[in-house]
Amino acid sequence: MATNPMKIRAANKDGVTEVKVLISHEMETGQRKDSAGAVIPAWFITDLTAKHNDKVVLTSEFGTSISKNPFLAFRFKGGAKGDKIVVSWKDNKGETRTDEAAIA
Amino acid sequence: MNNQRRNVLKSGSGAALLSVLAAAGIITPGVALADWNKAAFEAKNMADTLKAMGATTPADSKDVQLTAPDIAENGAVVPIGVASTLPNVTMVAIMIEKNPSTLAATFTLPAGTEPNIQTRVKMGQTSNIFAVVKSDGKFFMTSKEIKVTMGGCGG
Image (cartoon, rainbow over all chains, first blue to last red; front, side, top):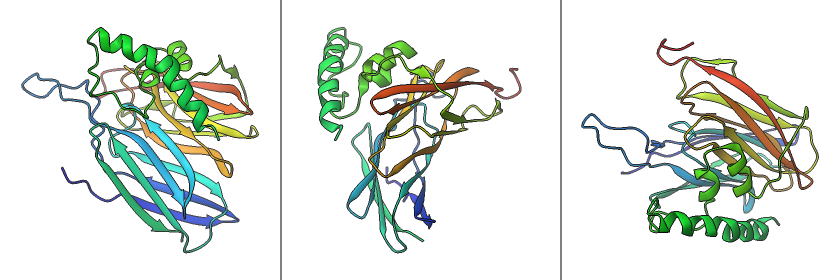
């Protein structure tokens, strides 16, 4: 299934850049059953990496407890207006997605 | 900096546990991911999760702040924030004691990234949430109980 782009917002204030990411993903736990009683297989993001230009500013591992359409906010020192923020994720089916945004 | 150590930890205790699970037919090898700490994410309680992460028992610390609602009306979306004033925080983890898998997420923070993370988690029932941080190689945590009222049938 094609995935929708991530929404990434990054803003620098007083030398600290705050990044907010909203990912479009089902984050299915593997605990639920469909109307026929069959278990819906787990499908969730396992790894996420955020980069500022080419420098990694956050790596993360997710489990099934993260909500559907995950939201993530974090802050790092530095960053300037126009710098590139690149976020990529990988899910347990091996699908990946990378999106980028500029610091506002 | 910590990547090598993490890999060693994963290939050590993690691999041993994985092979046991695979042998028992609980998981199929094809599903297992190479670079994801499966053992930690499949652990069912705090002690096993911490062990799989290679963490020692964290000390309670007031310098770890967990921001979360007292009552979550919708267990599917519970906003969680973790912040800390401890120095050199390299790792932040969020754990939900009574979820099917305790560990919700881990965040590895390179130098320059502040220990201030917000995300949203799912909670199956009222439970304690633990925020664990690694500062200067030591583990600290704080916890908070969040009551989940699902569809008005709980309290």
